[in-house]
Image (cartoon, rainbow, N blue to C red; front, side, top):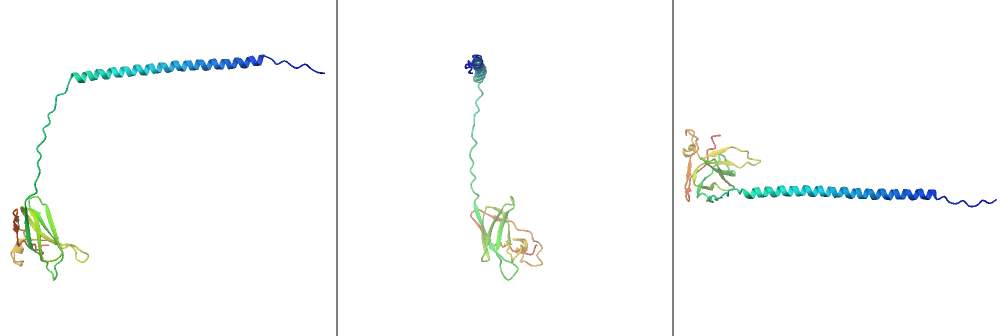
Length: 194
């Protein structure tokens, strides 16, 4: 027995079509809602910017209406310090031993305590250029692994007295240096006041 073919029902097809239509309408309504919301946001932003521009224009008008007084600047005169005129200190070196070690000779400004130094590696004389002024001059042995630091030997009253045990003072002598002049016989040798 043969059965006649079943007729497809149009009911499920209508349901699918209805669902597609509902979906399309929902998407369209959502898109329109989004566009409306976006337009509102753009309008709010534009209104806010317009308000800020108006406020800035008002502030600009206020600033332009009240000018600040001009400040006059007068530069200070430029003072260029010229180097102090130089003088020279010269003398002989000594050391209480059979040899003369390498020494550093320094002149200490009695007013500023600034030290200017030179070093000798050979010979028993030194020359030191310094600005005009008054100085205390001392020598010291350059330390080496074989020669420890011994201290400072000033040009003192003990030196000018002859380095004798009967000399009463070890006070450093003020050495006055004149510009363009050489002060000689400044012999820092008081190694005995340590």
